[in-house]
Image 1: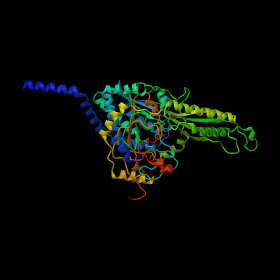
Image 2: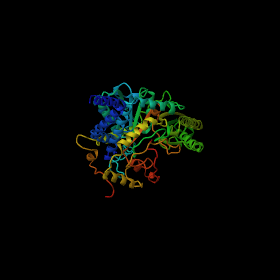
Image 3: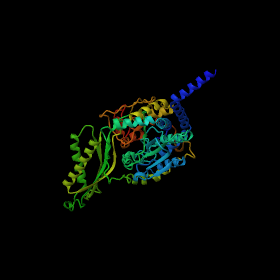
Image 4: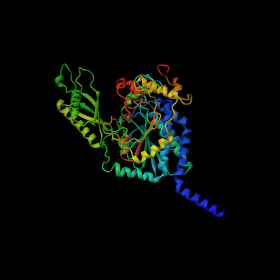
Length: 441
Length: 102
């Protein structure tokens, strides 16, 4: 009996040595699931609250106040106004290694105001911004996870640091390069980002928003004069804009097929009888890697310079945003994939499917409702895939990072997330494709 | 959106975030493996350099005018969780609202 008992003790000791960590990990994960379930009301409140704020990039004042308030109340240390961005912040809990970073966007889209749960175009406020892309839900994901983790770390004395970051002005690709430049990711070991999707999945390599970009505004400065009385005294800044655009459009034929470039005229002058002394144009230069994006950007500068020579004007420029093409970490993605499969797709009820199908019908899409299954691990995108950019790319080249796509909508990007598509009915006729990048700026 | 779809999807997302963070908090060798991939595969030949010129600053003035115009109107519709169980309830929207009864 004694010998048998010794044997049992030895066996137990061995098994806990060999399997102690995973068993402990499995138990902790189970506990985490329960703690998230217990916070469903917090998730609902955060999703709804941030949706109601409907704030555009760089102006996420109420949103940031609300989110940092919750984190602070729960014992996170806040550093506000980081990297020279008033609405950016970092929330930290814990100490030591590893340092796990969380990031997600919180800004919305111009003119995307829409009543939630309504399957046709019905703005809450005509012309107002709104969360057409679903950036209102990411903070509910990350903050809820962070509060659960903090509790587990306290209860089980787990070492490590949690850092929560906001994706300020993601729709403008406006901040991540600055967060990186400020050194905010220097001590971070892994970054877990999340973004809304119609899918539940993750991927590795250059995917989801496979193109990088530089977003830059060119301002031309000329000389005003009366357009009928003394046009010879004027130098038109608008002429420079038009010549730059014409030059670019001719050059377009001789650029790589992978490039995407587009512009809008942000200032075309005041009224026709005044030769415009000031005019401006805003360009996006997109390509698949740093050298090609840099090349497009320099070509843009050349076009602007050439336009000033033709018009005897001058130009200045303002960089609005920039983004490396993201590269997501294969090791982290494989770990995350297993967790996605363990959690599984939420159970959608009849009302959810009715809304999804009604909106798909409204948009002339296949009425197949919400996805029912999680995705398999997504490999890198082919170079020819339709484009889009996300400034988390800059983070992904400084620290191992993944992007979790969590299900929040029922339309792929080309069909475009609800109200965005409702704004642009032309898009109804583009054919929906599977495996296309999400709705990225 | 602020719908039950978003609430369910975000809850599922939070679960995965918490589980994945636990994987890396409790298994230091996984952090090492992630960095091995980062160093030996991802950045073996490609090295990060910023697009920013030294004097480039965040475009923090963007959208200011638009928000100044709309924020007072939006404020009337801010969600009040003390008085309403959901935002849909506050707005008095029947979920889902479709053009035709299915």
